[in-house]
Image (tube, rainbow, N blue to C red):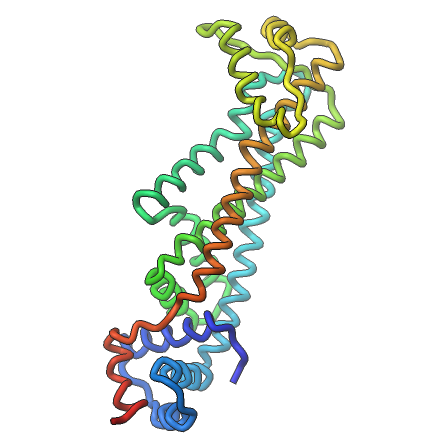
Length: 308
């Protein structure tokens, strides 16, 4: 029998239960005999029976195919994240022929990310469901890339298993925040490459707001990055940039460093910390996974596997 992780053992056991629930009991005389002879408590015997049936019916190989499809799906999503991040940087800075509006650039780099981050956090706090679109896309893509008809019941079995301990939210959290972290890192790298190879001037424009408002906003956004060593334009530079892009090297460098610092602090770091937090919850939560012996599919096995 193929060596599997504890999570994969539970996963296959749940898959066999779903299969019997939908298609009727399997021919399990030999599986029951082997599970009884091996001994152990009821959950252990149920798992031994299920793993023997999974090997016989090629569900174990289907699981391997599904995992290969999941890795390919993750690679596809990662490539899309990298391309999207690079696109954000291009959209923010442009071709260098015209001055960069710093707050339009900031909105291009961080706007969608912060909106979706807030949506994810609210969903986690109030509804317990979040990032379902991206999670379902990954599951659907994994199944399609697996190209194995027997893998159809694997995804529902995994979801049912994880939902009992609310682990699905942390698994999706790792996926969502990990992909956005990749996009933000891609945007940061592209931003640095563009700034290193092109000369950009920075301006701010407004019809309704006063110059003092932009001075306050710039300094407020730059306060946290300044603690990490990123520079913030002086008040004189900020005010002067409201009229035209300053053709002064120090002004261009100050604005560029400010923009990079804001992207790192408000784009990269939150996603990194959230991805690590979700990964920690996912790792620790796996130890709490177990079979629900009250389910009819398992309860009716008690007499066959542990006869009184």
